[in-house]
Length: 266
Ligand code: SF4
Image (cartoon, rainbow, N blue to C red; front, side):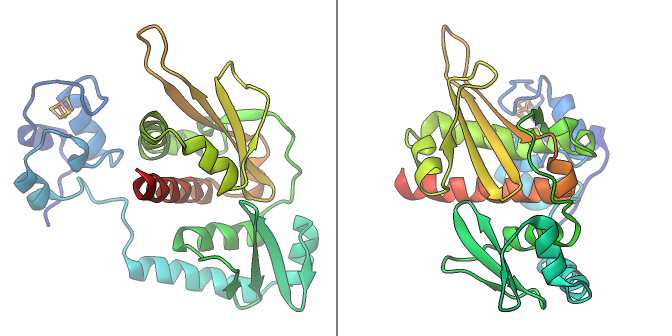
């Protein structure tokens, strides 16, 4: 599969109608975003199928192979084996019993031993393992302050902000717009909590994908010809408890779960 890095070469593959269906103002802006790895060429909804097959996912910077993931996990597990898990549990204020540290993730218990083996009575998704291990290894254990900030204001967030908007917030907004039980599912399936309306949103709720990493989800309903809006906010301490790559991974993992649930129910 070929990859492209030059916006002008990518532009040649697009229909140049500047229709805006990709949420970029022009085809050139979209081509530039693809060349930088912020978007995938397949995100242009009017592109020919055979172009996608031929050129795949733009410059190909984002999709690590299974072996890359395995390697990262194996390095994290090695590092875990070299630390004292009981001390890490104290730092994170997490229960530690029978050689296992337990974390509550979206209301469910997940236990990890010093070899990085996970146990839980629900399915353990691969998107969860590396953020959880990073949280245990590097999390500062800071208590959430209650002050919410957007992703781009976290340490290193600016570099990922475009990705985050396109890969997390916009797809989540799409689900919220089309799947009426989206927020009810967050409350029941993900143990979310409805909170007082924040930032003048119509719906505000908080999820805890990791104990000290709450995420505030805000949705503004469409009104008076204005389309809806959807944003995620993080506690200002989030980047002390988890590095930005893991926060991104964790959030895209949540998106995958939301998409699966919406697909099952729709
Ligand atoms: S959706 Fe495709 S054709 Fe329309 S502006 Fe975006 S890149 Fe151009």
